[in-house]
Structures are given as C-alpha cells and as structure tokens.
Amino acid sequence: MKMCIACGMPMMAIADYPLLDMSKRYCKHCAHKDGTMKTFNEKWHEVTLQYAKNYNIDNAIAKQTAYIILKKLPAWKPRY
Image 1 (cartoon, rainbow, N blue to C red):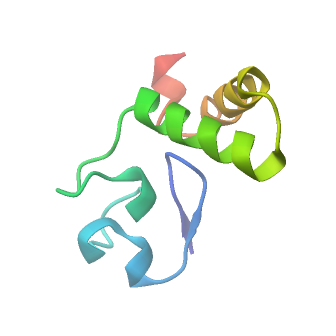
Image 2: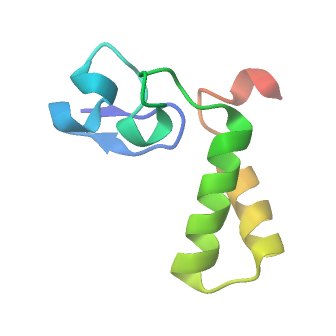
C-alpha cells in the first residue's frame, strides 16, 4: 500500500489515484483535474478548512495544525 506524499492518505485502490494512474505518488485529492499535483498553498488551505470544520476549531489553530502536519510529508520537505 502506498501513502500519498502530499497528504498522507493511504492509497489502497486504483480509484484513489489521480486519473487512475498508479504511477503517481499522490492521491486524487492532491491533484488538479488534469492530474498534476496541487501546490503546498492549495493543500494547506484545503487541510485548514477541513480541520476547522471537522474539529470545530478556530481557523488560526487549524491553519497552524495543518502547516505542522503537511511540512512533515515527503512532497513538502524540500520546502523547508
């Protein structure tokens, strides 16, 4: 089983891959419609919104939490 390099999601089925392309190292949620990977800022924004909604926390805390988690993932390590 592969894990998405951009968000950490387990990719267990072909449907988890962008454009059903299992050679990609990132999941369908981290891809644009054309199959290219989203940027760090795009994922940071999406994950921030998800945390704020799912955990009913302040947006500033969600943003900080998302940043801490994302920066540890392989896709974003070269940034730091």
